[in-house]
Image 1 (cartoon, chains in turn green, blue):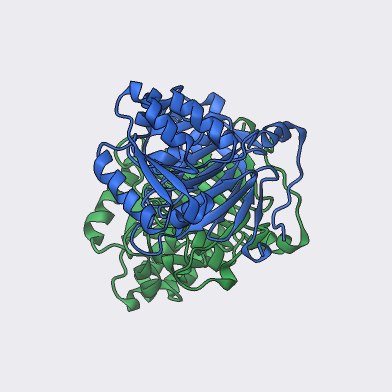
Image 2: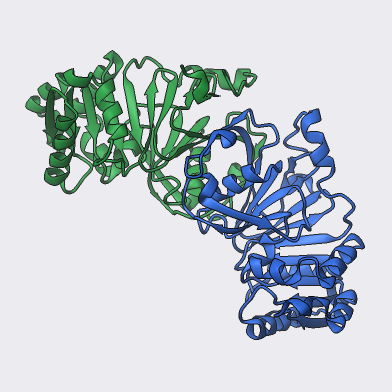
Length: 289
Length: 289
């Protein structure tokens, strides 16, 4: 059952069609604080999609200031879940992004996991490096890339690097920088409900000129496979579709003035729901089997 | 310029037409923490709509546990703004709701202002009292009724009396009780962006079976006059329209499970924007003059 059928118009069909251009890999984009001690639903989903008991996982600790500790914890989880091989790649300096040994490890991986930390570290240390190029190449060939918190933020073409929580949208309620661009044409925010981020999220979405935004709760993820986005985990994913808005005041607003938007579409989806990036439609749980 | 024209369908036209049935008064519904020391934009708008320098204001301190102090502060502001007469009515006991002297004061008023505090106190002490009946009668005749925070919450037929902030929507993320019912067929939440309330707000909206919800920021208000809703103040008003949603899981969800909703409409409006309750359309600032 397709539950939200929307008339396509010529203005938005181009961006929709290019939403997942040329990528055949999968993304698991996690809103932070995923369960690591119970069922590990989200991390389990990552390992399953990365090959299950034949998965060869690389943990990228570039975002965190505690790479040893964080890497060790995830290695323990992924090994316990039965992955065949778990490696850690830490890139503390810019030149580490071209390290041949690390490139070899990543080239052998079926799944790459970016930990949380500071998303600016990911782009500062990796963007345009050999590792970056290899990740995009392998993603196009089927690699599964997961990221939590900072590792989620970096997935889009532009990412939020700073922002005010629990505020209404204004231009300066958010600071954007280029991300790693694994999922183009969307805006992403994480720790969404838990930190009251809809204001900064709508500001980021409006300023990025992308048709769709995903606000992902803690212990919740979107699993992206081509045009299909599955919701996994405990919380909800708030999807705002601005492709057919009737009005916004973005162009007329000064930095600190409240932003207005009329006629956006709002979906709040939970575990088991699916969303189609191309049609921009929700697919209910009952229609999935 | 009407900026969001939506096709009406027979399912929702009934509720829309009855949205402001038989009321000719005005409501100023304030999201709390309105400016009291600067321009007093919202309180000024209330006094202006209540008659300006000929306004006869009654401050209702029923919600607060500090009626003397709170009443005094608002009296000072309304007198400074030039209202002709400012009285305070405090109803600490249930029998105070039928007090003839207070009824006379209210009967003489052109504007009634409900302070913040605890919205349950408003309904416990006033609902179905003579004061309640008089307020509804005079509202139908043109009385301007304002309320901030708890005084805003009570405006709708059902009101939020408890709720979790910064959480995704679940059935038990909010507790609802009957409100004073000045504005039927809507859901209201206040301190909206500042307390990260969209989760509890969407839960309340879905459980009330009303077509529209208004999430009102601090120092921000909606001024309702018939079908016309003007946005006043510094922040934004988040309007969620669920009249044409394609799907929700409300009926299938247990108390603590995440609620899903597909195809709601989202407007975020700011100072100078107008919203039409009957057409459920935004009217941009530029089209107002």
